[in-house]
Length: 428
Ligand SMILES: [Mn+2]
Image (cartoon, rainbow, N blue to C red; front, side, top):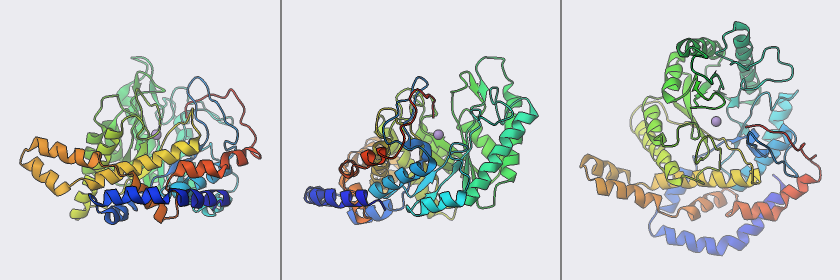
């Protein structure tokens, strides 16, 4: 617990309480508030360690005073987010960016801030200082075995680190692909991917999941090896039951129906996880729910639908790993992550409000107008007081931004954290 944050939460909650109660009472007329809050309590989303530093574009990065300078600082910031929003109890680390000498020290540091570790992320999309072989022409799918072996070994190292941290998932995203037609053989590179991924899969503990993340383009601009959910599904199926697909909302063409992909993968038992963010054009990595809130609601509608189906039948429990994956170029990352967690909870709450029995009835009766109206009824309900109440009941902030700003946290840490060098660039 950070004293400045908890004091600020108490202070701002006290001044917001009266208005909050009025808004919540208004909602009680239409919604079973306690029931929805109970269901919503199960929703948790992990914060990526790379998300608490200021992000960048391919052009520039603009560091802010007080941004984290080490993985320990990042964990501190993630602890602040969790204290404010209470639905982000785990962090998702990235290696080698978050390498430390002593992982038990890192785990203790997180535990002291009520944080655990979610999926570990490997990185074979850029070269590291002491690396023998370059990933310039690919990693797990490189034409040379020595490069593939290096990339495989790195992923297995990530599993070992994850074990030490108490994680139980490895997320694999590769930048492998080609910029020009003819540059690489699409079939042979997929073969090489499967062979490399099988070696990583073989090193996975029994209770772990290997999450395969697809991406349409970038950094490869003509073709990528794991381009879409179909390639991801083929790979996850070829691996076995411990492998599943991870859907990053920004990794699709602009008009792709992502909620349908979610429905398909959930149906197939291969929806393993999410990277939430929002976008207007490409992989913009903007704050969740900031550009296409209706799409986010529709994604959650499919998730609730899939959960209902999984619990109704005797099938594998449906619990994908929810993670944020955003880049904060022009905002304070703590604020962006807090409002994004709120947006996800709001989308989840709205999806929980859908009258599912009536929806199924309308669908079966081909009553199109009623079916779409049932979704709109839920989507257009202002659930913000309900989500705020969910936070408040767990000791969080009614208004996380107000509490965070009142705490003066950023200014305080800026006194001890060294300013990150200006001029560094990079997509994260
Ligand atoms: Mn991602």
